[in-house]
Structures are given as C-alpha cells and as structure tokens.
Image (tube, rainbow, N blue to C red; front, top):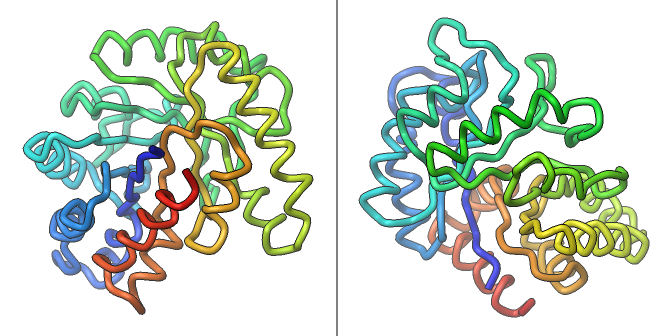
Length: 251
C-alpha cells in the first residue's frame, strides 16, 4: 500500500508567525502518527521560514522512537548559514530514513519544479553518494513531463518524487486524463530504470484517489499544505484517517 508521510511545515509556519512554541510541531507530528500516518516529512529552508534545525532534531528523535520513516527534504546546493547547518549536516546528525533532494531557491514561495538531471547531474552525484553512505534512501524531485527521469538511477538515487503540482491544476481544470497519462508514463519510465516512485505537492483528499488509481505503484505520498488546511475543519486525527481511507480505496 502507498505510504502516507505527513509534512508538518505548516504547523511551524503558524508557530513562527506568533513566536513561542505553539502550536507544537512535535505534538502535531505525534498526533499524525497516532492517527496512522506512516511517516513525517519536513523541509527545512535556509531562511528558517517554517521548520528549523531544532525541529529536525526533535522530530528525528520522535520518529526513531516510533520506528517510522523520517523524510527530510531540501536543496543540497544551498550553503549553510546562521541557524541552518546545511542539508548534508542535518542528515549526518539525524540519519533520516529518506532524504528528498529538491531544487528550490530562497526566492521560491514553495517547490515548483524538479531537477534538470542533465544540467545538475554532476553536482548531484557525489551528494547522493554521501547521503547513501549515511544510510539514507535518496529520492530526487522530478518533473513528469521532462525527459531524462531515468538518469536519476545513474546518479545513484533510489527513488524519484514526482512533482504533482501540474496534476493538481489539471484536476481542478477538468483535464485529468491527459495529466494522468503523463504521470503514469513518467512513473513507468522511472520504474523501468529501477527507481521507486514517490509523489507530492498539492495532493489532497479530493484528488489523491484518482492519482493513485491512474499512476502505477506509487510507494509514498508526502502531503502537508492541503492536509493541514483540511485539519483546521476536521481535526488532525480525522484528516489523517481520511487520507488513509482514500489510499486504501485506491488500491
């Protein structure tokens, strides 16, 4: 069954908007795991706009104690700065089960594209190898409509995470069939190269089922923005269980 990893960045956004420690990121992650989530995702950025380095250490301890996956997303090319030791050092300190490499810059509101593996491959290869030596499974963010997704395997990655923003837009616009064909084809190309397939970005209870029915063998979905938004109305426990129900029905 497809695993659900809950991205708790938005909990940190709420906390940081006021200062202090509420809402508590660890407590929110604990609630998600109690509801049945299979793992926790964070995406620390150098500007610390949401998840901070201290959150990463805290959540690494929590997920280790619960024997669930901890997935750290981040830009491997972003240099360290005050308050941000850099993605590799964070992973060296916490040894997450999975690291998802994402080419986001400081000026991006959110991740909105995958890697260009032809352009970025030589820089990615040694970083992927270093993370793998730490015992981390490495996934790389990829666009479904870009050629060369297979090269992620040559670079040493174990998985790709398909950037699903375009799928969510197509779902809203009613052009679902064409988008599903594109994503299904990308998944099959990746799998033929020996890569596992994850997916994430703008997935919701409304559009997740159709995606999982249309795209073969998705191993994991990472969902944060929509899930936390829905939880404002339904509560975290009910919302996480709702996603798990969608996943179960899509099998």
